[in-house]
Length: 319
Image (cartoon, rainbow, N blue to C red; front, top):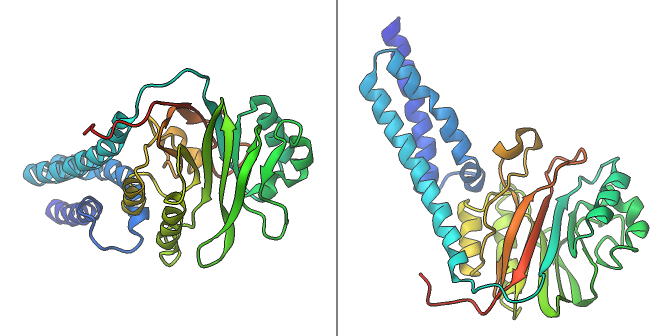
């Protein structure tokens, strides 16, 4: 009986390790970005296998399984470290206060729109990226006092993404994103702290919807290549920053990540969740602080609050 149990656990452990290896080696598997996004959660769950194998007397199998799991975790940590090294190319901050940003998927069916609007007004960020805006649509008029400039959610039937600002927009555009032509991509220039910055707001499709998100990322790439000067990209990417397609997108557009990736989904896991909402910068701009909002206001996402500062020109000689 013990041998049969040991054999069964060994098979399960081998299958679990294969799943982790598929992520670490970027094997062509279905829903790869979903797998990559939760790879650390899978690894944490897999740690039970070597413990059970060791207790059942299969010590070498336990050591082997543990070695593979830790190797996959280390490889994932290296990916994050390599991504974070992009911040090393950013020059020192220049004089000025920079600006604050809110990024929040409020949930389109939210019944707490008034509370969310109250919180936005109390925080008064310079820029607010709001996803699934119908959740606060009833409060849009009241928000004009704090955020006199807005693009998005002009039509309730097609409303999703909106961008709020306390400073005037220049050349603000709503771009129809992807095959579905949804109002989920915005670009707008504004002047904050005496400097021009382009805000790009994005609500990416879920990665398991027929690979639509890959085409959408290429559309965003084409948009970013048309933009000069500092850029802030903020939104709901529906994948972690270290997932393979998002990682390639960040690299080819020379984007710099924030100093850490606060988890935003699912909310019940708190800081142990997956950071599928995020912000990136390009050019002479960096995110110095970022964290999750203290309340999710019954949304299925945690919101983000961040602060960005302008820098000198990026040092392209840094490794």
